Image (cartoon, rainbow, N blue to C red; front, side, top):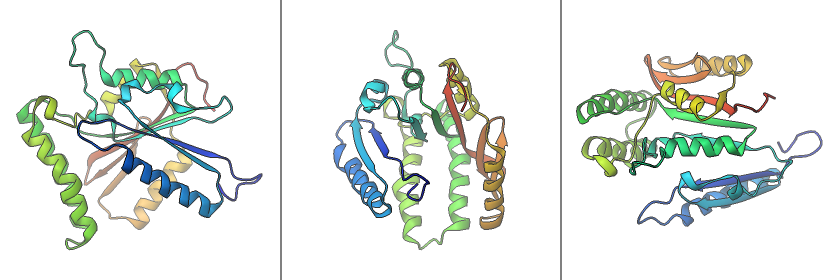
Amino acid sequence: MATREGGPPEVKITAVRRLLPNSCPAEPIEETGHQLSKCARQFGVPFKFYAITEKWEAVCIENLNTDADEVLIVNDLFSFDILMEESIYFDNPSPRDTVLNNIRKMRPDVFIQGVVNCSYGSSLTRFREALFYYRALFDVLDATIPREGKLRLVLEQGMLGHSVLNVIACEGMDLVHHPEKYRQWQVRNQRAGLRQLPLKPNIVKALKDKVMKDHHKDFLLCEDGQWLVQGWMGRILFAHSAWVAEDVSSK
């Protein structure tokens, strides 16, 4: 962007951090903003950073400080699985549906979604699904990162370990993650009035070529419908897609 003909555009990022009990929400997200601002200055890109600490269901276009001539991109990478599938109150809509409806009302130029391709049910099926899913993730680490590496320790203990413990040991409101497979998200998104955009063949080809050239042979990258899916040894772990409001024309 810094070398773009006509000069770099102004980039504005609004980060939304979900407010959780007994947390200190401001400090980590503000530090992220400081680091991004520093990077932008190094490259000469005009940059603004805003932080919102709020329930995701409550975030609307009014919270984003957008201008009419701005390109609006809404991006979520694996975060929506902590939203409950259904409200704890009988008459209230699903938090997931509320968030998706709010995104549709924002009418973004594109909504980019990344989902964890996993689905939990009862305790037994949740244990079995988690076993296969996290075994694949640990296999990826085994094949790509030395066991004594600091990054390996952070990923195993600081991230995956906590997630596995929560999935196996917790129930009800204590269960943090409620993932759905990408086909379930597709139905949910369409029901909310979102339309899936086609993948660009040249970008998909470039990504596939890079994976084949530079990464482990057991990594999977392919298309399923209009989803770009990633996996390991035949098991799909993540899926990505792009959406717009149903009544917005493609650009």
